[in-house]
Image 1: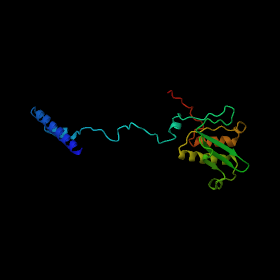
Image 2: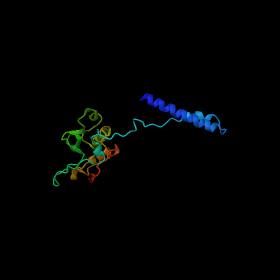
Image 3: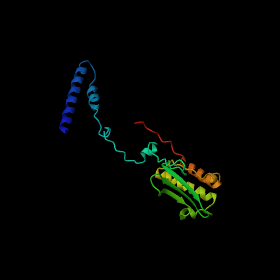
Image 4: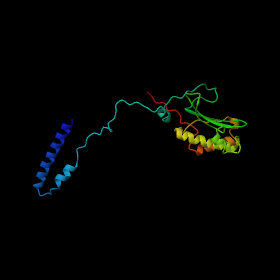
Length: 189
């Protein structure tokens, strides 16, 4: 294989020399030889060839393109089951907790709470509006690090207008998280 490439390059060099001799007879300079030798023959790069069999190694790729199947569940069930990632925010008398669930697992993918010592030591109270905002900031940062930037968040209707929930939503949006998912695209087959 290497011998074939060498013989090919020698043949092209000899052809360029013959062209330069013809041009030299018509009073052109001897630069022709150096210009012709500096232009290598283009060859296909191994990295630029396309593999005919492609395997998707990113399991979230279809989710990000909104092509993955969403489990619809029952229309009468609440909260709805049609999501890739769902954000659950809860407040108790003593603590604030936020969790991100995947549609394929009942275990939270990410979570943040005022029960964590790193958050608790920075707050005066673990269930106030400032605590909700702090939990939102930390969870938004963790979601960005995990690559989850879109999720569904549907608050309980009678708690949606509270200052704590609004501060949490504002902190999540301020952290670059979109609290809605794209509608699923249906590709015709």
